[in-house]
Image 1 (cartoon, rainbow, N blue to C red):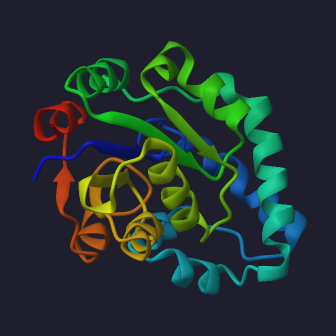
Image 2: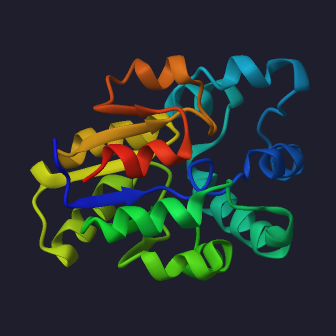
Length: 207
């Protein structure tokens, strides 16, 4: 399948933010009164879907916007501790160089996203940021509209089950990366169109 539009996720897909997330999550849990994550349960939690994880941690849904606001603020202050995965800049340039339009959808703010990407942002044609936890599907549709490219020619590339669910809801293919937040087994359970085990594979298999 040849895709004309690739919509990337940021955290866990392009940016290695999982270690940072593990450092801050329990302070967020204490403030917003949901369950802390213990070190010995991290691997098991990577196998859960997003809704299952929210239930497990007993996160009050009405507090989600407040939690997102706090996490964005903390991330803005800690961006120097979060690096892009090796090979991201080269991969994005190669994908764009093959005529595939690159876009980025994130729950983070556009300012944080652009700061995280640095010079790599030049390869991204469209940004749709500030998505709610389960609101990425609408952002995918918005990006397709901006790019003028049909769902049949679009793929979303991410590292979480909710990315796969959003892609399905938007009627587009999903490409799963094996190095992010969710386990590969959990992502394979969503029946992705493609599974990437190395960053350079993305450029090799798109276009």
